[in-house]
Length: 433
Image (tube, rainbow, N blue to C red):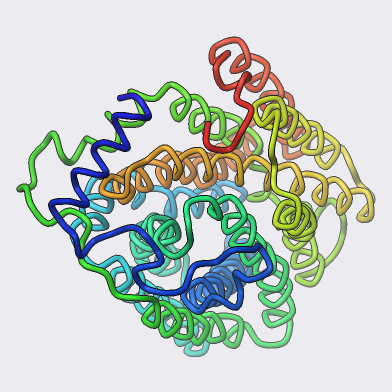
């Protein structure tokens, strides 16, 4: 489907469902400058909901990883933990996108955040009462991951309806800033809280998920984008069909999939913190925060100075830099150098995130955003959670350092291959493709 076809589809859908307009001016005043975004109530509620949710998720991730490794001492279990988070995304992808396009996205996201808060509360109770074992951890993580499988693409599909089309790249950078602020505070908070009170390290995310649900519930209500048409096999798979029909989208999503799949060193940070860099939970916290700090620095720059040209070459340069930073981190035995490598890794990653999200959202009509966002979430989940499993399995087979260095080199190789496979992606000049 061409870009003009997508616009015609969107216009036709808006004529059929006038109450489901994606124009943010229907709900609130227009935003004219980047600095006005956080004074725009719908975006402000979205921004704070994003912070609370990601702080909770990241902090809980540090606590769960450390607790599990302390219980079992197994690198493979850390990989399986990533698999438990990834599997629900694969199983639920088709349903997630369909639901996000049929029902109130605001309500879907807030309900999911409440479920995640309940799972975190169960982790806290299990830790306090002493019955939190390996199997229970995996089960509760799977419940939380199932809710997050709905929350993430639904929140992504909500963002374009909160701001004007021309402001979406800037809004994406600001949303990424919120994400990275949370990634900085979340891991550090999780590590320090676990050092003082393992129960508190799980109870705090529970409270934060509830706050995120309250913020999400304050977003403007909108009618479902797609009111008519039954659920068919074709409609369930239409998100995949749409992405496959756009080589630009296929290229950018598959690049992220395979590059990050091999560069998933984050899953091994508990081993680096305890066995290689010789630190405790506090060290794991700052290691987890370092990529987010680098990403925050870059996202602030991108929010102030949006990318306006040579987007394709910048994307490939960012992926190659990500791979090089992974290699440096893999061989480092000095904490400051490891933190610097993770900082650079985070800077490179956020450039890729902003480019990918902007290209996907700006080329997708609103009535398809739920399903395409679900496909995007599947690609990201595959690269992150399955990448963590791959890293854990590779570390168990060939050793921790060797597996991380191999992953970084594979990331660089993927970028070079994709430059040849998708020349149109290499030639992209602007964020709208």
